[in-house]
Length: 185
Image (cartoon, rainbow, N blue to C red; front, side, top):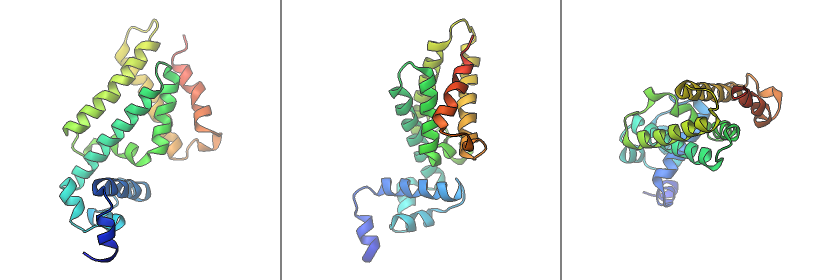
């Protein structure tokens, strides 16, 4: 290997370079508008490198989904018990990690039974349920409340990302009173 590919290929973390190239491609073209060959070109590696590390496109998207759930869990966990701020962390994650967000919630794109995906998704789910428990109050149906909270923040994030409500100002400031409304008595 000579030239750019040789330099790029030995940059230290080929897997990371391919995942980053995938995130860029997804941001630009959507979750299915690119190929492994295109990612290799973007990352400056051999056209076989993505397949070598991930097997196929589903394998790559599985790795991206697992990473996304891990990043989301870290963001949620950092907010502690303030469930409104947990919701804001979810929104912030969607905005700052749009490619991950777009893949994570389209399980037909990846192997949803992949052990890394399952573990990371379960961690994120547990954090959301714990947050709902802290806000539950007199609401006896924890599962319905958790689904309502997730639907609200996920829907808000989707509306923001598509531009449907982005003209309203700062996303976090717009979202806070909306999220508080769910837990009002």
